[in-house]
Image (cartoon, rainbow over all chains, first blue to last red; front, side):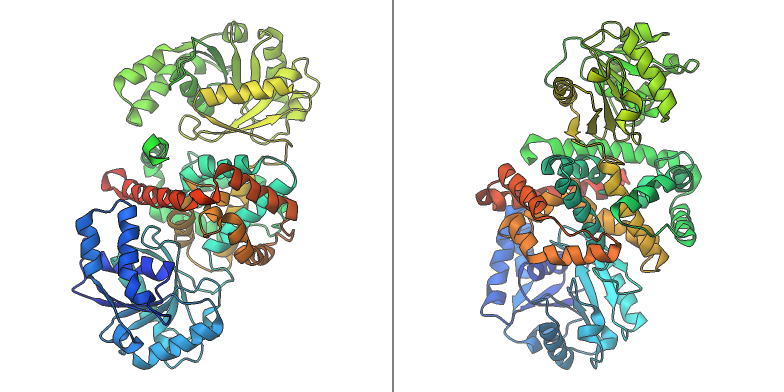
Length: 314
Length: 314
């Protein structure tokens, strides 16, 4: 990590699989990480479990030791949050449990501390709404495991201050994650909605006997997934036609929408959505640079296949 | 490629982007590749265009020369198909054009030659049905570009012989591709249906103002795509719960289906589809091996991120 925190202090609230992986995100970037868990000795055991996991992933012994040294298990929320600039909660996914822990966190955390929840499925208003510190609270939903998958969905509560959202976004980006911002707390947020669309269509295809489950899984892995690991679907379309995404949608947009109707997705693409998608791609990459980026895509595809097909990695 | 063809002869019919990339698939594995195109000098120009593309992708000069040497542009279908064991057609995507070229190919190709079409959107019965050589004809739909993306969807016509399907599958696998078999010619086949589901939901989310197009694209790339490049969605679920996919679906299956209904996909997952998905995963990986495979996933995720984040590859 290039921009080392000056011993920023982060509190991990809940030391299960997700909390432990979050601890690695902060510790490897040089933060002091305090670990707290309401249950038994989960926090005390966490550093050893984390070290074992990282060694299993091939991390060098010296790096593992440095991370372990940055982790401090504590016995109370007050100790965890004392002097902290950021707290990441990853406890049970129920409104009652989340509400209770946020009230306690809010009572003891210093005023400048952001309170973030790993919540994946509860609308933020349901457990953050009306909290005294709602203004400094929000959802920061990771993908599993966060120290390997950089995506974090930021979902503000109705009363979250815009400044706090902006600060959380900068802070997480500084720790090497990739935060995205949801302007509305749609059910499932974004990643899980897209995942649900794919998994439900897969179940439909299996149910119809279209192909074997293994063959259907391979269509994602060896077809779409190789591209989407390096480009989202919008960039994928952008690089699949000489005139970019506008050209691609002009040629195939109707076919996609006809197919989507077969899947049950009846809503046509709105003109303003298509326009926004095109505008976003052109802001990211001028048409004149398309061909060069296609070369980047192809070279990376080649490297990706070599990496994934190397026998030692199977 | 470990299993070198003994100068197997392959015919490329149509030398556009897809046909040229197919030529690389066969030539790099040692086949003799004859190139034919109905239009002007497209076949004559193809070897130089292919060589330039491969050099741009960083292939070594000696390998490029070996591939170029395996390519032979010809001026007639009869020359292209003489002595060929396999023909891959990649011409314009219209029923009339496909039907006409298949009739001509069928008239001159030796009896043992498989006739395959790169067709992406026409049901095979519409241009192969009733052809004298329907029994040896089928769709072999690639993803672009086939020499970098291994997935090939095999879609037999009603009259395609099972032996031919099995032989095409073996043959393409021998050339390093990954063929999957569709038992029914559903609209869009598999890959494009899954792609349509994702793109339509992306357009919906943009239209609703849920997040910026760039942020939504990042959700695929930095969340789901990193996993799907190495595991299909079924294997992803399998490795996301201690008890495998059955455990995962038990915990989250209802949530996924509720989300899918929000997207317009009203059909519930059929019990037999879920059972088939679970059975397929258990046949691929016993529960006792799950933990080890999770380690493989995590080590590969780490390598994948290092690869994709290396500045030189941006």
